[in-house]
Image (tube, rainbow, N blue to C red; front, top):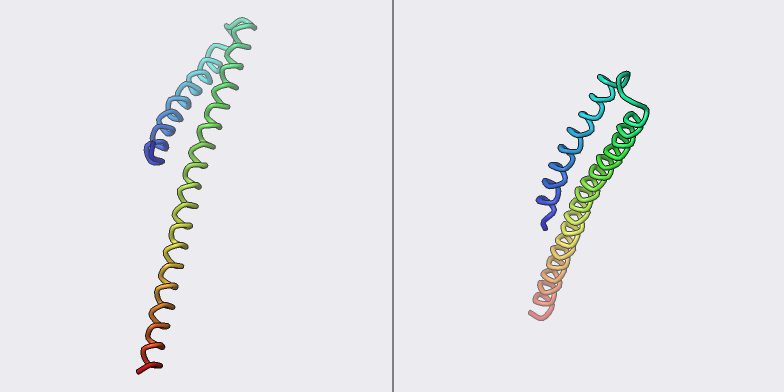
Length: 101
């Protein structure tokens, strides 16, 4: 899967995870005084779990994006090396041409 597609998929997952996390926050804020201790613990567990998922998804997105940048900079460096090599070969051939003419 290409990195752009993977990032798009992760961003969609992040959006749904954030929405779900916000719903848990709303439940906790609105009904915490009405809920049993077990239900509150379950909601806090869900909140922690969803927050971990959000953090992991964000980390994956950043990792893919930084990997893309590293690949691009490596490719640019290789291109520059090829260009410098081509220029050196051209200068060498030019000097040889003048030397033997």
